[in-house]
Image 1 (cartoon, one colour):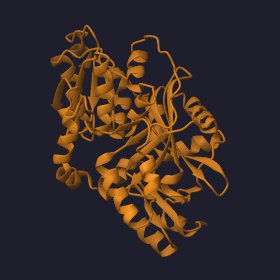
Image 2 (spheres, rainbow, N blue to C red):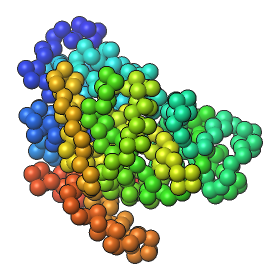
Image 3 (cartoon, rainbow, N blue to C red):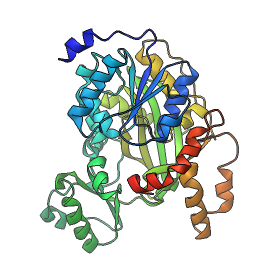
Image 4 (cartoon, one colour):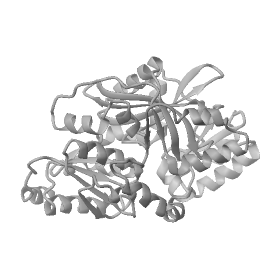
Length: 399
């Protein structure tokens, strides 16, 4: 069926980009590509800030990616109706990555699909597979247990505090509205485990040692990795997040060169045989002075526009690489800041008021070159639209 429909779909004269999900992180993609004259088409199944950007040429509502057959058929029909054959697809969430990677061969009759094949993508989506690969190639991870039942839970030799988290984020987050749970004693461990087992399959529940330091020790390596080479990269220390202990979103990040971390991340991507954009997350453990791999996002991540501000335009590098054009690599600039103003300002003010943050340290994050998640002088409307959308955001996604 798809092959027949693809024959009636002409290749666009200049391939554009179809961006899935118009949350604030999509703005970095849209603005990057528009600056290079690349046409953009944004789709989302909810009200989103990206539709208000002057860099969004076209916008359509679509079925949610969780409704996989409907979502796929929408993509097929859209390519024919809007003449998008040959356009690139950019994904901004794990569910879209999963759908695109599982049906990549079908979709490639219409689009250039910029996510890795499913056999690779599932290593990123399922943290169990992420950790197993890291252990196999000698990359440190936090001490982790995978109890499949209450009986196995009783046998765990684990120190508290610990953290309970899902192996597949969206399966848990969509129901619980949180990424992880801090566990302070064995009684709480059993209570939280039973609650989680009512929401997701017990085989997806992970119990992990809690590395001290929270956001102070979070680091990430973001890159375009293609054909065994890093074509563009950025390393950042993610100093603030919300919620503070197990953040759903980074609110401040700063670029920093850490050769050891870059080498570990590159080795991991090579072992995956990875292709495309990714963010590999680490946490520095002050107890044994090691960077420990936490997870990998097989897509663009919330603060990726920091790389653009630091001199590495990852969305456009991906565009050129997918079209087979030459990609000139360059290093990123140190000490560039990225801020998620809508969340960072009120949360930081609260932390300062509680005496948990130094006001001087906060003001340091406003010095020098900086980028914002939404605010842009050249594209101001999304910033004001997001302020008006605060009640909607709180109601649908929490705060």
